[in-house]
Amino acid sequence: MDETAFRQRLSDMIERPCTFGKAVLARCVACSRSDRIQIAEREVVTCQNTSSLSRCISLHEQLRHNFSFALRKTSEQTVLSHAQEMRIQCGGLKGLHQVLHDDCEVADVDALLAAILMRWEDLADLPYSEVVHAAALCYKGRHG
Image (cartoon, rainbow, N blue to C red; front, side, top):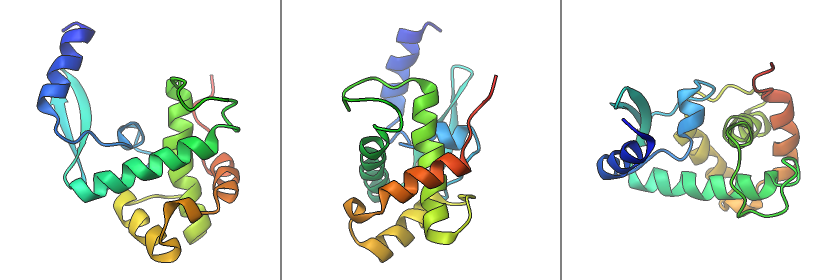
């Protein structure tokens, strides 16, 4: 299946694509609200819950904004490479977990977001400089 046909089929089939799907597929995090499905011999991750997806989208936007300096990006409109997106998803979530729970293992993204919102109430209030620093310690990415 060519890439255009795959993208069209994907958008037709997937009502709620997981915002942190790359991190879930890479198994650097897990989420109780995610489902893995196969489309054209590829695996994609969907979200089971609309409100969870909405929170994740907001968190991803905050992480992307706050990681822009670390990624050496001056515009948030710039398309990110896979490695940069993995730093935001895996590194950002692991960094958040480190700041909140003092360890890097994210067993449930949805539960992490619930704990974050209980502590800070607004995603804009998170200590993102600490999160970015913790992300660098918790996520190294692939090396050569």
